[in-house]
Amino acid sequence: MNKQDLIARIAQDTGATKTSAAAAVDSLLQGITRALKKGDAITFVGFGTFKTSQRRARVARNPRTGDAIKIPKRRVVRFTAGKALKSAVR
Image (cartoon, rainbow, N blue to C red; front, side):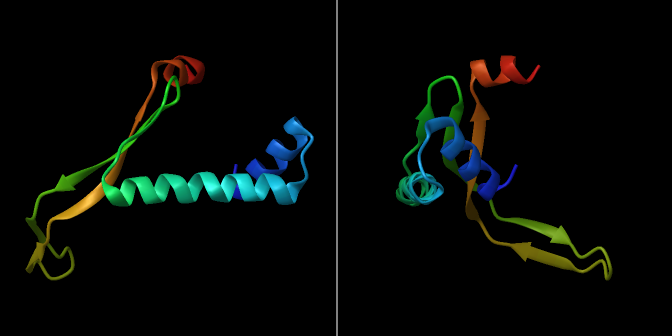
């Protein structure tokens, strides 16, 4: 399922137009992005939690040449599935 499929499903399930469903999906994604940029965690009870964490700096190898490459530390997004989502997927 991609974003357009999700918008169509929301419009169908709620009886809303695709335009308003698209606005709702865009607003949700922008809200999640803004919160993660600030370092906040987003929790949807039963679905899961989005949060950021620091990945430490490390040295890796270029597989073609074998040279060492320094990879700087960075912030990454992590998702942990909730209990209801895990049991629904089983």
